[in-house]
Image 1: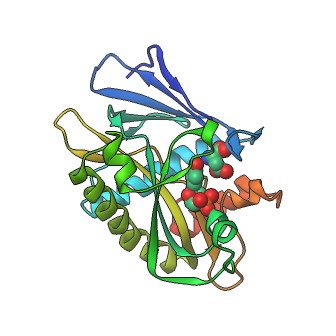
Image 2 (image 1 turned 30 degrees about the vertical axis):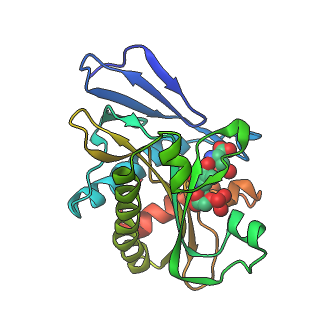
Length: 237
Ligand code: TMP
Ligand code: ASP
């Protein structure tokens, strides 16, 4: 499958049309962005590592019965995916307090959250991805009530699968962000990516940060640590 013209260039991935109108190619670039694009750097091998990591995780989710966009790993940096009509919201589940939740509510980083917290954010860098609720999504027509309900259900289902996967490999899944889209049959499908760029992972014992907080906070060894996460999961990169 060949890349045709560019459909969309995001901060870390580029999406291309293909000759099949139902399929796109996602190219994972080395660009690494934080703070809504305020900090951007090229990190050697990051695109390749995230492309392969994403394929690995999405395959695990498929095996658990969750429909994903991923079709096939094409090369180091490219994956073939189903074309989706993306819903412009981010679905976040938090098992442990960190990041914007800590800043917003003044709670302690590291506090366990039972039940896990669910939040929606609007995908809009210019507005710094504001937090929204179900009613904003329905009132502005970004998704239907049924889709809102299904996005929550699927995001929590992903938590069950991935919490165990990371726990068995000595890591704590602190939080993560998912994005969904609608395929050509009208079904809701998990799109975008699941990589250490879009989640928080801590070593279970030492609480070492093993995700994009290494980049946000200037902790160093970003890609090396992503490779360590993959290695612990049994994915050799
Ligand atoms: P937050 O603590 O900054 O709200 O982020 C929660 C989780 O969602 C964290 O794992 C990072 C991820 N996330 C993204 O990947 N992209 C985004 O634009 C946002 C807002 C969060
Ligand atoms: N993904 C967003 C950005 O690139 C937010 C973040 O991860 O900090 O700026």
